[in-house]
Length: 99
Image 1 (cartoon, rainbow, N blue to C red):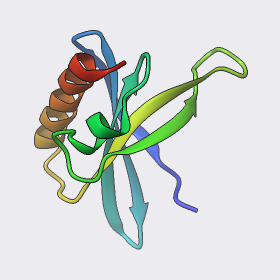
Image 2 (spheres, one colour; image 1 turned 90 degrees about the vertical axis):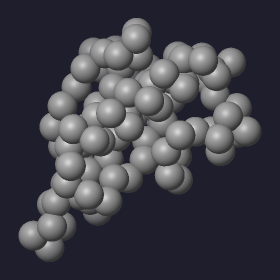
Image 3 (cartoon, one colour; image 1 turned 180 degrees about the vertical axis):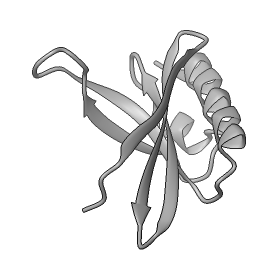
């Protein structure tokens, strides 16, 4: 099982965003996440401006039993500023295309 740790958390245009990282076999891997408020259609998810976006249901912080949908994607490089830019683009896209 891979254990992801939050490396950076911020809000961009009203959307909660995160960068997470994990280390596997001495290699660091990153992923970006954007919280979805009201849902995102499958068609909109497929057209997202990042490679291979996936849905994740995550527990809502500080509220027992509450879950929120997030869109996440893996990042192959170690260029964290470029990853943050990609997360911001996804946050903008989600804001324009959520249900």
